[in-house]
Structures are given as structure tokens and as C-alpha cells.
Image (cartoon, rainbow, N blue to C red; front, side, top):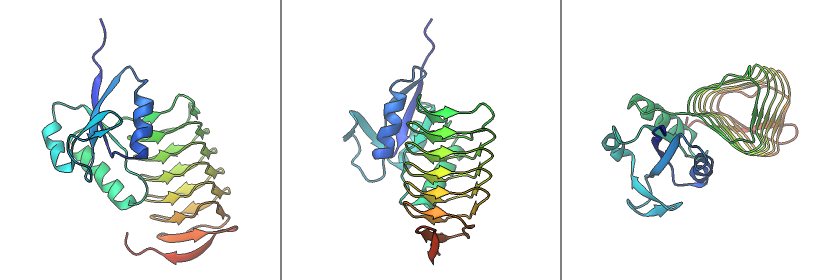
Length: 218
């Protein structure tokens, strides 16, 4: 007897949402039935599926949908974290999405709602929180600790014993050397090389990375 597939929606009709759908299209346990989006017209199409509503429609989906995948990008990390927490509080399941080409060591620990895209490598003894997104080609070395709601853009390299705290965005092609702590709600600009700890709310860019300003909106 065929096992019933879980019904899912993706929150965010965006490039991230499209990447999630492409992975789930090959998952025989999950059926994506539509998208939730706060800025697109209800019943319009995205990736050949309906936009079934916005945030206010989630409560109506209880009992019809088993799980929700968060496809919100990095432009508003605070909103991304808040939405994930509200989805969990409403009782929806938030499984991880892992591309089959990703390499994850058995000793690594993942959270809930993590999105791991093409060619990502996660080494031994890595701890990953909830709602963390690893874009294509990221390399996370041994004994790294990543807190909730962190976004890694493509091609990021993180050396061993690094901590990346909640709400932080790491830009494309960045490198973080070993034993570094990246604070909460920080931004590491694309192509940066981080050789010193990054304070909470700091925006750092360059080689080596230097603080150019602080964010007070989060």
C-alpha cells in the first residue's frame, strides 16, 4: 500500500521558494499543494501552483496542510524569524529540506525548518539551530555552532569552532576563519574575510572585514 504523502505549502513565492519546490518535487513523502505569499494576488500562479492566500489564511489551512516550508529570503531577517516562530506556534510541522547533493556528516545536528541547497557540505560536530538556510556551495567546517534564523548566501566558507548567532546574514563568497564569533543580527558583506569577532548588529565588509556601521532596526 502506498503511504499517504504529507501536504505542504511554501511560504514565499520567491527564488528561495522555487528552490525549495524543486527539491520537494523529488520527495515521495511530501506533496506541495500551493504557495502562501503576502504580496501576490490570491489564486495567481507561481511555479504552476496556486497562491492559496497570505498569512491571515494560514489558520484556514489547519487540517488541510500538514507542513509549511519558509521560502522567505534575507532582505528582512527579523520578519523571517518572526514568521517561522508564528508558523510553529500555530502547530504546523516545519521539516528540513535537504538537496540530495548535500553532504552532512552523521555527527552534525540539524534543527527544524533548515533549508540546505545544492552542494552544501556540513562537517562533523556542527550544531545548526532552527530556520537556517544554506545556499548553494556553502562549506561549514567541524565544530561550528549556528543559532536560529541565520542565512548563508552562496559559496560561504566557515572554518572550525566558529559561532554564528541568531538573525545574522552571511554574504556570498565570504570566508570566516577559525575560532570567530559572529554576533546577533549582524551582516557580513559579500566576499568579506572575517578574521576578528563581529559584534551584535554590526555590518562588516572587506578583506579583512571591518565594521562600517551598526544596525539599530533589529
